[in-house]
Image (cartoon, rainbow, N blue to C red; front, top):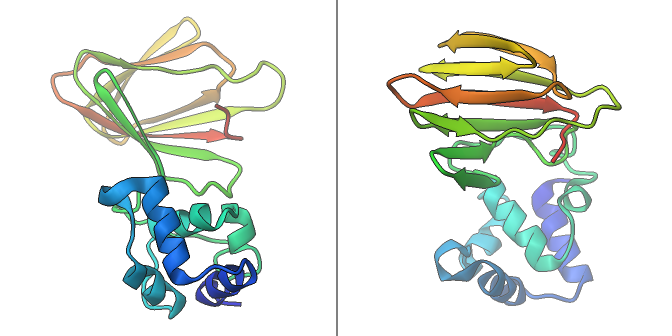
Length: 187
């Protein structure tokens, strides 16, 4: 079944009109972020598919994303475009955007860390096999892993068991951009 067919099927089985879904989205996401009736209509015709729109419709219909995607062409793979950020975390001197599907076992973050700032890290539980990989796009990043200190530059990477105490600092002169992958994901 195609996702656009499933969207309409789930909506109709719940006794919701497109207008009901649009109203629910407006209540949940507000004027600035809510998608319109027309967008939902076009989604059900297979004309528009932004991941952020799919998430809004799932929330508005009260179904989980895995439930909505089950049995569709997107159950086993997903493309998340740059403009379709799934979630974003901001702190003092950093922006971290989730770049991995919530259906996958790993977590992927695209991080922008300003100069002279630290990116907060949380060690994974000691039990289990948690791993972390960090890949630098731009700038430099000081990565503290246990008692070791590593200076990483553009196109360098480091991987380690994420239960080890670790920290990330930008001591360079420019904003550092990097990817963080953790498997399995842990919050």
